[in-house]
Length: 363
Image 1 (cartoon, rainbow, N blue to C red):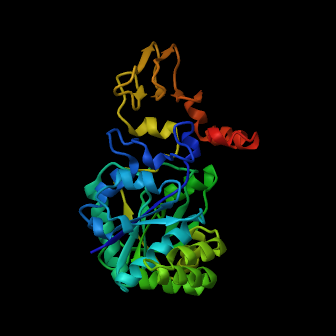
Image 2 (image 1 turned 45 degrees about the vertical axis):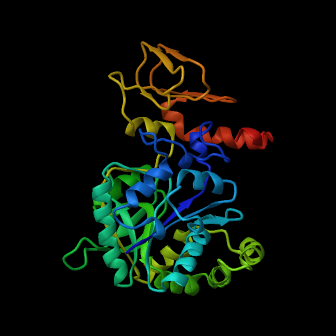
Image 3 (image 1 turned 30 degrees about the vertical axis):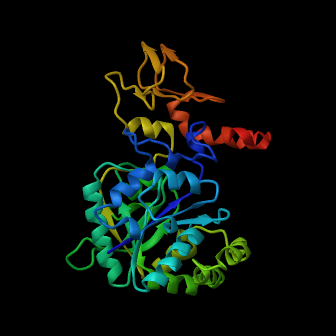
C-alpha cells in the first residue's frame, strides 16, 4: 500500500490578504465546501492509503493547525521542519522516515493546496504511477495541458512504453514564454508539471545520494534519530545546514537526463489555486458569474449590476459592490484587497511591498 506524503508549506502570497504566513492557503476552505484544501487532500487519498501511512511535513508555525484539522492522523505522522528548506528537504525527510519503517515502500508526494475536480480519475492515475514506481522508476503525474499556460513548468515526454500510459520524461522545462507554450500545446509531447511524485523510497534516496550527497547525508542522520530522545538535538543541528533547493532541481531534472523518470498523463480537473482569478474559474458562480467564498454565517455581500466578481467577505461586515465587472474584492479584519481579475497574479507584489516597508504583521 502507498505511503502518502503531503508537503504543507508556503504562504500563498497571491491569495493575500486571505492567505497569510501564519495561516496559509492550504488551511483555508477554498474547495467550495467546508473542507480546507489540506483536508480535501487527505480525503482524496483515502482510496489509496490509510491514516497510518499518511504523513504531513509542515513548519513549526503550522503544526498545531494541521493537527487540529487532521484529527484522524497519528500525531507522529506530522513531521515538523524547524525552518523552510524548500521541497527537497521536506520530501526527503519523509522518505527517510518511511524507509526506516519499510525500506522498499512506495511513497507519493502530493501538495496540500491543489484542487482536483475528479478524485476517482486522479486515484486511477496515481495507481498507474505506482506501477511504474514498483519497476524502479521515479514517477511524476503530468497534467494534460488544456491551454498554452505560461505559469507552469512542463515535462517533455517520449513515446509511451509498453501497453500502458507510462511515458519517459526526457526533460523538465521551465515556465515558458507565450509562443513557446503554444508550441508545447501543439506538440502533444508536453505535460504540465504539477509536482506530484511517486517512487520507491530506496530508489529516491539512492538518486538523492548520487546528486545531492550533502543533503542525503544530513537527511540520513536526521531520519536515524527520528523518534528517539536525540531527535530534536539532531534535527536542530543538522536541518539548518541542508541545501535549500526544490526536489525538481535537486533530483528530478538530473534523473530525467539519466533516463530514470517517467510520467503518467492525467486529466482530472487539476488546479493549483494559485490566485483569486483561478479560484473564480473553478468554484461555483451565480447566474452573473459572481463567486462568493466563505459568506456562510456572516453578513455576506450585496451585489448589484455587477458580473464576474470574486468576493471573499471575511471581516464580519457587509461587502457591497455596485456596477463593477471582473473584479476581486477580499475583505479581512485588517486588510482589504480590490483589483481587476486580470491582475490577480500581481497581488504578490503587494506582499513584497509590505515586506519592504517592514509591515510583516500584515503578511
